[in-house]
Amino acid sequence: MTEKVPPIVVMGVSGSGKSTIGAMLAEKLGHEFIDGDSLHPVANKDKMAAGHALDDTDRRPWLEIIGGTLAQTNREGHPVIIACSALKRSYRDLIRSHEPQTLFVHLSGGKTLIHDRMAAREHEYMPPSLLTSQLATLEEPTVDEHVLTADITRSPEQIVDDLLIDLA
Image 1 (cartoon, rainbow, N blue to C red):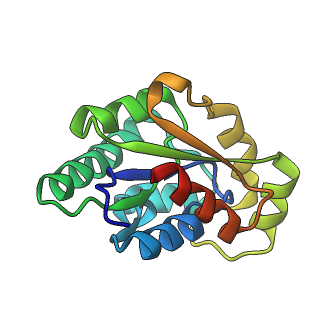
Image 2: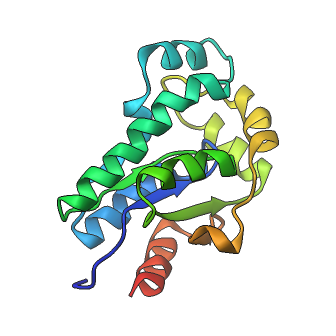
C-alpha cells in the first residue's frame, strides 16, 4: 500500500484481538506494531495482575505515552499501529490531543465470545474476571471520532482484508 496511512490505535476490550489484528495489519502495511500493554508502568501491570481494574489516574500516564508515541512516529514519517483498549471517549480524546490524525479501529464483539477467548489464553495481567468491568467502561466510539469498526466474529484475515480496503 503506497498511500499514507495515519497512525492507528486498534482498540477494544481485552480478548477482542487487538494484538492479533494490530500485528497483522502492521505487517500488511509495512508499519511497526506496538502492543500498548508493553507501555504500561509496572504499578499498572501489578494492579491488573492482582485482579484490580485500573482507574483513570492509573491510565493517564499510559495514555500520554501512547499519544506521544503516535505523534512522534507520525512526525518522523513512519506512523505506528498500537493496540490499546481506549475504552472511554476521554481516553481517545487524550490520545488525539497528542496526535489528531489518529485512526481508531474498534474491535467489537459479544461478551460470551470474548470471555471464551480470554479463558483459552494465558495473559500476564488480564484475567477473564476483569471483562465485566471493561464492558461496563466501554463507551462505543461515535462517527465523529475517526473510527472504523470491525466485527470480531469474522476471521482475523477477513478483518484485516476489510480494513485494508477501508484504508485504501
